[in-house]
Image (tube, one colour):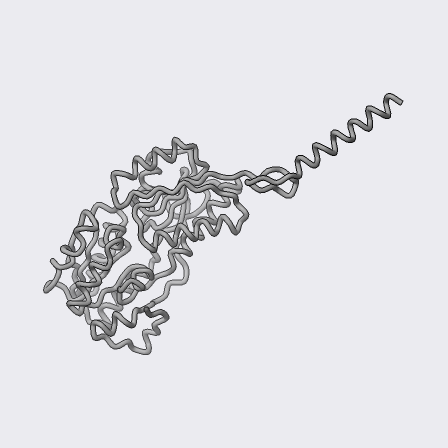
Length: 328
């Protein structure tokens, strides 16, 4: 009789423990009833502008779609490069599981501050020159991600400027302190050597310098090309106003800048490269891959889009063969 009583007590306690294990919490639960881990994701971004914001949105959506519970700690340098180091140290000391670095300067700061915490970047143009990875195919270390530099984007843009718009002198406003920007300007110069075209540079240090720098190009250029420079893009409307007033065709480096008044771009959606970076983060968080083993990805689906309102403003007729896919 005593043994039967003990067996009954064990069964009751066991049932109570099982019911407790099946309970849910704010962190969710797994199929086995265990509480799902909530990962802490540090986010560092150089400045507020639509492209970078869209990339972050894509990143978050990828984790959500994969069923990853995440708590984000987003920090923004507000265009101040010196703030990147402070942000990097803050994120590392807070014990995050992974860092999402949204821009070249942001990625460089965190990569220089930790060799242990996994880092996934996006909105980076030249990850090798920025010394973030050893190569695109084999990153090595604790850093990988997606770049915003399709190999055909700049060549197609320069060809369009020359063959369709008759440009010979291309004005470029950029922050020379950004490795991302310097790499793009140098790439443009290299391509134009073979096209009988030249670049006229106007360098800025802050977004407050952008309009004056653009005005300094008046009379020296017959077109503008605004690359994915974080400082300049954050003040793009200043460039647009000068370009429209002077009737200068202004090619830009990504779609959001077309929406904001740029004439045209060979580009892709920043949301997409953010989403792809998020998919890489999922593999890392789940323990399926290490950053060193995940090749850096390039954007997909390069296409031309145009802003019909801007074309009308500068007196440019859009040809049917340009196949504009977007207008604002």
